[in-house]
Every structure is written in C-alpha cells, then in structure tokens.
Image (cartoon, rainbow, N blue to C red; front, side, top):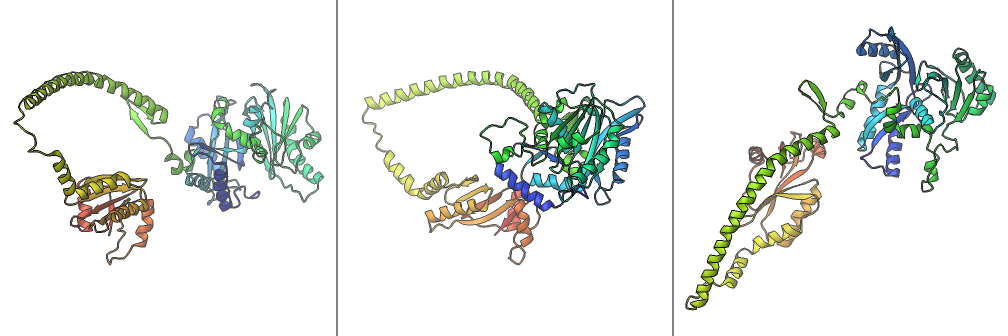
Length: 506
C-alpha cells in the first residue's frame, strides 16, 4: 500500500509465498533472504558519548514520529555505524519496517518449514546488485557520488562516499499511469532537483524501479554538474542483468531483478559491505531470539554453539575418546587371544570324545533324536514362530517396536509417528490368526498436553484430540495379558521410564 507503506493483503502474500516455494521446489535446507520495499531509510548523527542502547532509543523516538508507524505499528529497525563518523559524532544509517508486518512474514516462512537468514530492504539489495554486476566499476573507495532511486511511491537521493552512504533524503511522490508523462516527470524533478543542487559529486547514478518513469528520460531532464548514469530496474524491464543459462525457464529469467540478485548474494557479499542492515534481529523479539544457537559461558568467554563450533567440539571429544578407546582395544585383543586358546582346547576335547564314540559303537546317540525334538518344539511354539514371522515381515513404515514378549502370553509394544501404521500392523496380526485373543490394549500419544483423549463419561474429548495433533509420535501395546486401568497404566509408564505425559486411549 503506497500510502501506508505496508503489505496491503497479508493473506495474498502468504498464499503467493507458499505457491512460489512449491513451484520452484526449493529445498528446506536453504536459508531464506527476504527482500522488502524500504519503508524508511535514513542517516543521522548522534553524540559519540551515547552508547548503543541510548542510540537505539533515539532512533526509536524518531521512527515513532514517522507517519508509517503508530501505536499499533511499532517499528523494528536495523542500524549500523558509518565510517564517516568523527570523534564528536557517530553517523548512523538505519532502515525500519512495521514490527507486526515483519513478524507475520517471518511466521509465514517458518510455517513452510524454512529458516530465515536475513531481511533486507530494496535499497541495500539494489546497491549490492549494481556493484555485483559491475555497473559501479568506476566507483572507488574515496569517490563522492550520488545514488538516486525512484519507485512508485518514493523518491530517494543518497549521497555516497565509496561504498557507504553519508546522508539520505526521501519523500513520497504521487505518480501514476493515469497522469501525463510530463506531470509524472515534473513531480520527480521537483522533489529531487533541490537535493541534487546541494549535493555535488563526481557521478549521479539514476535508478528507476517503476515503469512509469524511464531512467534515461529522467536523466536527460535532470540538471546536474556531473556525469549521469541511468538504469531501468522495474519488474517490466526486459534487460538481463546476468548471463542466464538456456536451461532456465524464460518466465523465471525475466523476474531476476536487481532486488532478487541483491538478496541472492546477501550471504557471500556481506564481507564486502561496510554496513550490513538486517531487519531479522533482536528488535523482532522472541521470534528472532528463539532461532539463535544457544550460548554457554566457559572460562569467562561466551561460546556460541553454532554448527561450526559444534564440529570443533565433536573433533575434540573424538580425540579424547580415541585416547581412551585405543588402550581398551589393545586389552580386548589380548583377551580375545586368550579366549581363542581356550576355544581350541575345547574343540580338541570334543574331537577326543567324538573319536571315542567312533571307536565304541555300543555307546549310541539314538536316545536323543534331533528331528523329533525340532518337530516337537515347532508344534509347541507354533504361535510364537507365527508372531515372529509377522514381526519380521509385516511391520509398516514409520513404526518400530520397543518391547516383544512371545510365549504363553504375548505382548508387543512399539511406537509410530502416525495412527494408520499402528492400525495396519494390528490388522495384519489379526488377519494372520483371526482366533487370536490379542487386543489393542493401549494407544497413547507423546504430547505435553495433560488432557485425556477419552473423557470420564467414555466419550472423546474434542479439545484433547485437537491438541494431540502436536504429538511427536504414538505408543501402543498389543497383548493378551490382563488389561490394566488407564491410571495404573499411566503410573506404570512413569515409573519405568515411559514417554512423558503419555495419554492412554481405550
């Protein structure tokens, strides 16, 4: 919404986001960089004696006064100190957006199973992309130049020195396709010309991100005492900023804008940036903090338990473990050698006995018939072998057993991440022996919920069933042993290390 500078319809954003990830088949291991239109982008000076917290409070005060924010739209922001700071003043650049809008965007991405890496504004992404594709090759670290960006609702003039801003001017503009071209260009000129007059430089780089304003025409109408470079970067621009492989769908290739390029190179390009503005930070509150790797204090130092540090820790533990295991391995090898010698002696004794039986046929082994014993054992334990066959061949996917007791009484316990696998397994057992007295005595779910799925009057508790959708997995018991009450069952599971807060279902 060009007036409120916020997403006009969050439901459409969520639907489009889901369709986009599904259509592009993006792997969930990838981190997401979210690029948003800049709600506000400013440069300000603060006394050098102010610490980071005081500076943050001062920035918040200035943002609250902005019409884009209100009591219901508190800002989240990202700030960075600029190299142009002095001994007396710190020059700070910052960008901001509505907290509740960013929160909903982040939650939408998380709901799809992806992780957020950064939230960048279109200004930073545009600048990074221009630098990456070589359009700013004439800019040196000490070069004074001006970046001018025009979009559908805002005109911005950003004086730069090298790779960092030194000031920023922005003003809403009213342009549109229903207006005459002359009126649209006059609107932009009336806003930009006074700023440009007061900010001379070696270059002026004009970027148009709206199809209403042509960058080349605008550059020709600007009055500026320096070379003017122009670049059209609207979504309707047909210019290819990168060499696109023929294998890429042309419909996708046409959407590779400066913003897309700037967001895509964000992670690798950070080391070249003098200011890293990232709206995915602590100003968002718990939604950001919960995503950060845990930290520990060790010998007065704060250690972040990142993947890299965990790998280092694992290597250190592995070295220590090897130092312990290798001597144990040598000791075990010696014991194996001793046991092998004992086994050789036993085999020699067996050979001696067998030789004696061969030499003395009056001693017969017919008193023990192996075949009869096997047939008798199979007949006696037919049911046991049957259940062994079922357990070995009929276990569905995503179901595993935790306890198996076969004999006069049978008990099979296990876990699964869905109910269908449990019912399928139970049905296989009953189909194998329809006369079996096995029953599904227990079906529980591992959930933090304290609500019983079966209410006191024997009916189903709807609220509990809905809560169970958050369960990690289910636990079951199939048995023909005497059943126990749900309370005794729950107590028993708690006593013997069963799943926490397991809720039984009759």
